[in-house]
Amino acid sequence: SFGAATALMSTTALLGTGLLGGAGLDGPLSSVSALAILAIIVTVHELGHFTAARSQGIHVTKFAIGFGPPLVSFERDDIEYSLRLIPLGGFVAFPEDDPTKLDENGKPVELLYPPDDPDLLNNRSIPERALVISAGVIANVVFAYAVLLLQVGTVGKAVTEFYPGVRMPVVAEDTAAARSGLRSGDLVLTVDGWQVPSDG
Image (cartoon, rainbow, N blue to C red; front, side):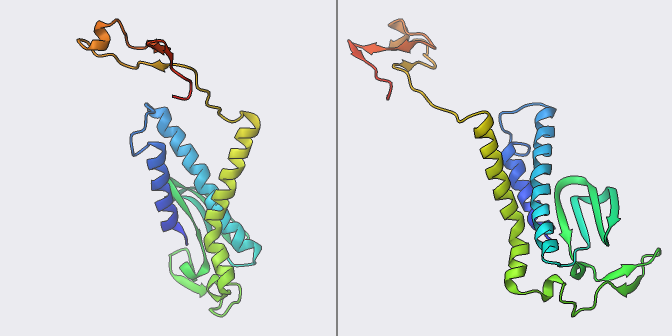
């Protein structure tokens, strides 16, 4: 499975969104927003692994978003799909991770697939395995590019326009600037007759 890589990616994303690193956003909604964005990123990432494996006919046993005990799960075509308690990652599991089926008492009953099955991930060529392993990151890059294109196409691109002058953010008391009449927020347009240009 690719759970460890997803956990690392999740921690990095949380630091980047400020959930663990203290960005300028405050309140519980910023945490909920960060977790929602993280869930989308993780889902896209795991779908990349899953799609790359299934499109090549490679056996997959589990597809999970989150870690820990399942909140919701169902099985279809011998694959267990689940949404789990801790939303900080996800995984795609292959038969090599757990090669036996378990009975109702949790005892192994049979091999899921024979060890020489050509559709096991370990029995595929290096390029096929490399595609499955790298597909999560590829999916994230494609997704990020699509979101960027959507944003530029609908909202537009930010344009920075400079105006003449320099704004004084803070003018400390008892300084020459304060004594000359400058105040915080003032816009200085000229100095001794010289106009302050817009390019700094």
